[in-house]
Image (cartoon, rainbow, N blue to C red; front, side, top):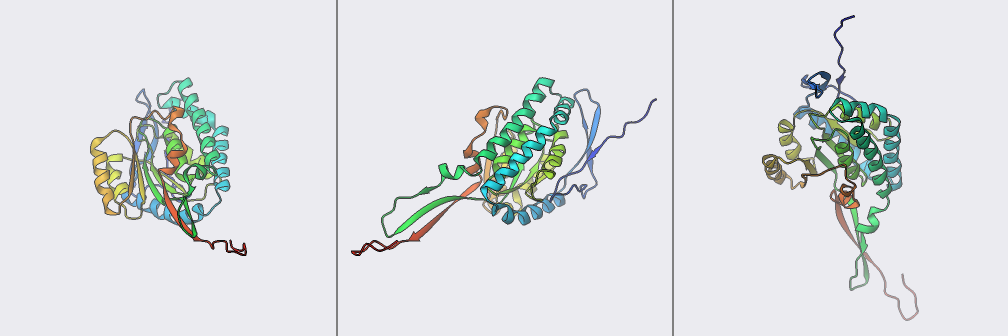
Length: 294
């Protein structure tokens, strides 16, 4: 029987919910054969602003969770992705990957989540210190989360690009708003469904779909965004982001020409790209003749 296939319209993921874009716009995603496979929301400035509000609200409770608890939650994302790996392999194949490439991308994504889950309660040990100072005090330097981070995810990867940018950002206690790949967006909201069932508090991770050229000005100028990650090679976009960031001195991190499938591109130092060093001075009493003191 001839019939018109009803394409799924993928919503966005904001504040732990799946709203439609307030603009009412969408774009049709096609596979390598030019066949229509899904409808994706075209995110707007208002959608991004809603996501920032959700991310800011979620920041303090998420940052105050223990590192061990955040580790458990990242591991749970990996578990849920493992349980749905067949779906993600199929979606990557629809977007042009061979079966072997799709399997490698899904398995690497799962392993990367576990990698960062393992670093959650350890990265402080290599990036913090007790500083040698002269005086009756201790001087400690520790890493703290930056805050709300906006992300332009890699365009060339549908899944591993999302995982590789989100995991090191949230593991230290940051929250994020991510613009997924436009040309390979099929996995992005499916991954949001994994996040939604993985104990991640609403607002910690927010995923938008749409056009980078339209949304980069909003991602880079919003006054309640503390840092921005741009994964791409557009020199014009990089220049614009750096100029726009001066409005509130956002920290800008650029990742260009990265092969996210390689293990070289996972590191605890990616975590510290989105942390601030807090230094604390703690007075002590020198031990007197009686041997007392602390």
